[in-house]
Length: 374
Image (tube, rainbow, N blue to C red; front, side):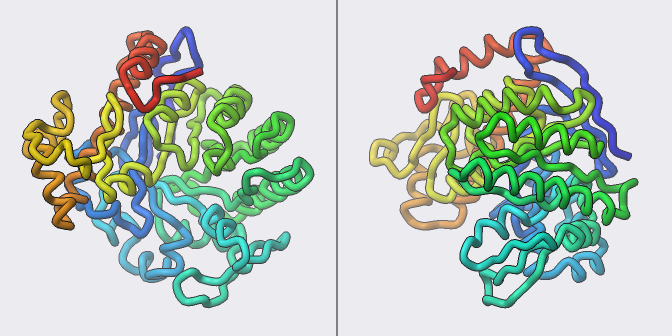
């Protein structure tokens, strides 16, 4: 019920075009996944996400475990039924959220003891528990529990961290009982160290997961280091399995990630920036709160076909944000998610036509926010 097919490889880069089949539908790759942290993509209804073109969304194990609880979601028929989303869902393991708590958690070989950010209650999350929660959620793709080392970290710390991640990955695989309906991805760690990325990739490939995530990037390191680590890591991963770069969603990083062989991306960026009045376009970001848009009756993007751009002007959208109307955030979110889906659609077409590098050059030449590229 889970299969990845490599449909086309770009002849001048590592970019690739594929199709991922899951129990809840197929996914054309490269793909961007909107984040629905708490079983909802903020301000958007499921049917709206379908209209926008979302193929798969991501939800968060840590947050759903704390509230409303994985047992309730299982009782409701799983996450798909609970949130009325019929297409594929990916859940992360909760590892990143737990490790980001810093002073409120303690790491041991068995797992992580942490205090809830909601009420301070004490919890223990182990590899087995992370898999148990995700099995109950019923998501199509689930993540192994990993240790995400902060940036920057010393080589010795990152080495011990990735080796623990490998041991935890083995435990996750042993604990995973729903293998026919849920694909468990291993997560490559190693920070910004080439030797450690190579070590982590080899250890996880030896465990033979149906897909591989690349973690520990986009955590504060310079973009050139992230790109270097991708160039090292992706060629070490199986060609016939999907590759997922975790937590990346700016337009430039999507283009650069695809060029380096990544198939899947997720990030809160399009929804989070939407709530502050920032609109993403292929020519750069638009801060709708700027006074120059007060009487601008043109759409956000003349070339965009989303609901927002088809129906509303910059002046109206600015009015909504200035008046603090909820509709403003909804329309901005609608546009931003559509903008990233549209970007990925154009990328897929460029790969199919073997002109990805030409597309990349055109993108950076035209986008004022990302004028410099490697």
